Length: 143
Image (cartoon, rainbow, N blue to C red; front, side):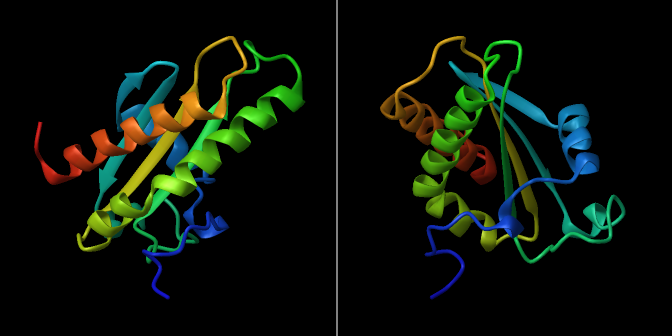
């Protein structure tokens, strides 16, 4: 089974390095699909090696999720939203992986939930699917 067809979300695909996350927010681009804001950055793997030596560059797409502590005081609420976002991403990432896997670039994605109310999974799934479709268009170079 190839890496493209797997539906898991292993640690190697997670964006965890604070250096890479800071670089993503500083130099990356973003778009808003309410209530999800998507930050993204395309980079060549050899340029990323300068940032950190420990990362696994065989993985072409890395993703992270976040929920504001200001909007959700309880950690259980934040954790539930992050779990829902990761699940929606995991279910719909295959086409993006297939597209980016054939290129010589690495894509970093960070999804931030910005609303103040607890979402339904269907809403998050729809918005994350929209975000991934938009990222696919960006990677392909079509408007």
